[in-house]
Length: 153
Image 1 (cartoon, rainbow, N blue to C red):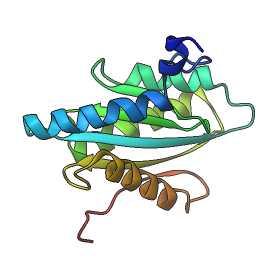
Image 2 (cartoon, rainbow, N blue to C red):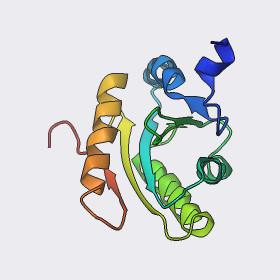
Image 3 (cartoon, helix red, strand yellow):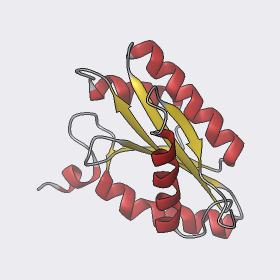
Image 4 (cartoon, one colour):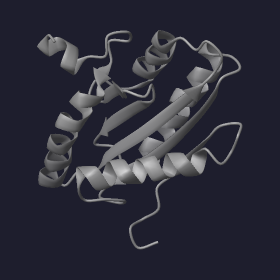
């Protein structure tokens, strides 16, 4: 396997899940060091014959250059949102979902959002929180966006 294959997902050109797991710890550490927030979203898109390239295009069009879009091995998407608190993360994912509605008519999509330090202090906790929020979003059959619960909730 070429090194590039480990970094980028072949169909979409987005970063891979392996890259997410190697990059996220450094981003959380940088956020901690700089006392800055960091958003993480996991998005699941369901549509008949959905084109992952179209989804990736909507994601990359919406995100800033400093953000990191990844495609997970199971076909979902994870987005690292640099220097983005909860409110900004929520708005960014809403913009992605609105563009998906335009570019992938008839699709359903769910998203879970978690932020450092509001929901977690370590990268594995942050990903777990975003995954739990996604599970809650999946309770709405038509799609939705859920935010992680603070650790004390």
